[in-house]
Length: 453
Image (cartoon, rainbow, N blue to C red; front, side, top):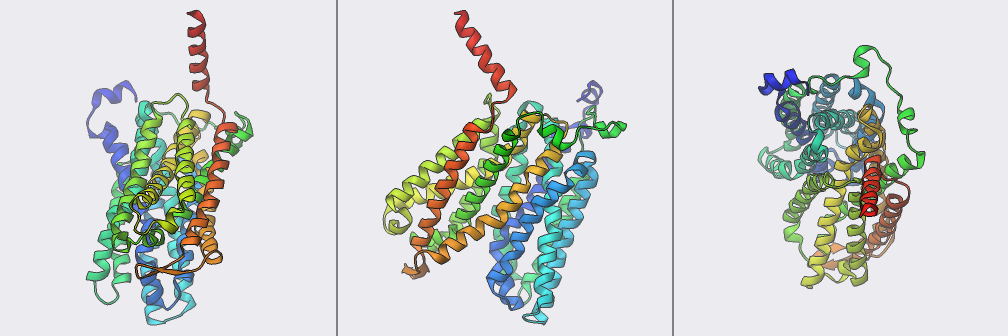
């Protein structure tokens, strides 16, 4: 920040007002995309389709989140006000449109128009709002909080993770309290609420005075490929792949979380455990990124995430925790610990990727580079849930546990695949992702000091 800005003070130059609060307003709004499971069955029943057919709306939303971030990253780089306005309009319009097509589907049961309309509104239009809204505050936060970049980005991305915990009980209350047609009325009401929240965030969001954007003066900054080529390509490929694997494994387990909890005989506590896991997801986003600020090499945090995930997944596999957990307190605790750690690591992977990229490639084109990297989220959104569903469908069989039909063998088999993927991710983190210049300098200084003694 410029000296003049520091002297003037006030809310116009306050990093919390111009970066942290708008980031939370944007991310706490768009993060409600993860509330899909709360109302997906209600949508399917209301419009006359199966839950499996409507599930693609969520998969499309995550896919277009990643792809819009990848292709619109340059817009975010050049003009955060334009990108945050696009996010506000697209997200609110997508929600309102989803409500309309649910309403239409209620009048015309089984109509493909309603299903395709929901795919377009919740998937494509909301997806564009998600991608641009996710990216818009990130670089701004890192510019305002340059000494604690991880803490700053973790705070915003924690808002994305916490949105589910905050909004889920509100949505459930609305569904039961709005009466007939509550499902589409809920979407219309929330479209208005989130438009206001995001528009306020859009108005407040501002980069610090004195920050010089090359595009603002007509200079042509380096293209993304030129930025990536400043390091060996395997370095960036390693970051992209380990980010993709972490999301895929997280989604594979989280998508089966509700049924795994029922396997443990805890069907009555599903809602509470889901809220706690959402808190771990948000806490991992903030905690792991703040912790990474204290490390010489931010990649170390990914190594820790993968090691913890491998250890707990391996223990649940060895003990047959999901199959044998019902009635066994120790195994139940072990399985719940796995769910919480995977949620925390899933969130931590998101919050650390922009700061890891900035450590390796600088701040110049970080929004565009972060956007390209979020394409990993797009592909993981299509593969994580579907991979787990395919495994559960093709392995094991349903049995009754505490009055619920579940497939313990299928859920346990999912863990074999996620364990293998976590091991691959750890290998990539250890071998492909090179230490940053800062880490190498610190290592050289430590060696020189040791030799001097």
